Length: 286
Image: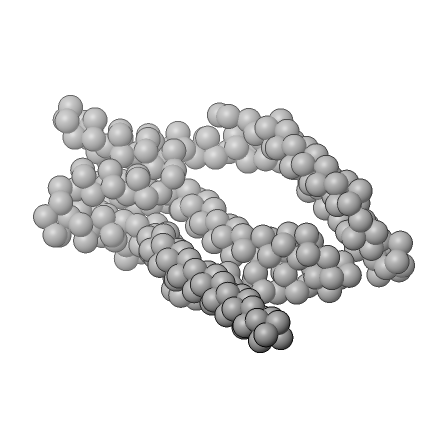
């Protein structure tokens, strides 16, 4: 009787355990599906602005691969440490996002570099007798991306019934450029007050060109400080990697012991604070 009762209890325990595992697995599965849908919606809106040709599904796959690779890499390198494996998964999760952010930053910087030439082209087209829409069409035909893509999108909105002022205002919402805001605001003021647009555009181009010249000088003066910040941020990790290649047993306690993990956390916090203060010092507003 006792044997039968013990067997029954084991069966109940097994059923309970497998039921818990199945429920937990189903919960994780539903959570991943829900998060994937939200991730794809956000990525679609973000990637459409960049004209990268990168689909949201591809970014999702890169994120999954980053989490998988980061987890196994840190798990193996740190001697099967779960805490460091979780840290690797976190780094792998954010790596594709940082890549997209880098692409966005590069795109907007290129847009700013093209803006002066685009303004001059619009001004010359206006002097040649074209209206504003025709002048903007010249930018889309004669210049490359990203400025041609952004002005082309403004033209498409105008053809669909959106006033040109609204279409250009929408472009300032898509493109985080102070110079573009100056151009659009000055253009709207000139159109309301009856100013000559070609002269307005030429004056704005001269102003932006002078600002870019000053920015170039400031970048040259602060380049050494920025480089020092990058070197000081990467140097500890490069040295740790070299020491690990030379003598893994000497470096592994840094990742496998509680004290070592606390020290790594302190190092990361201090690195972030140092990088933040260096960026603040080197950032000079014009």
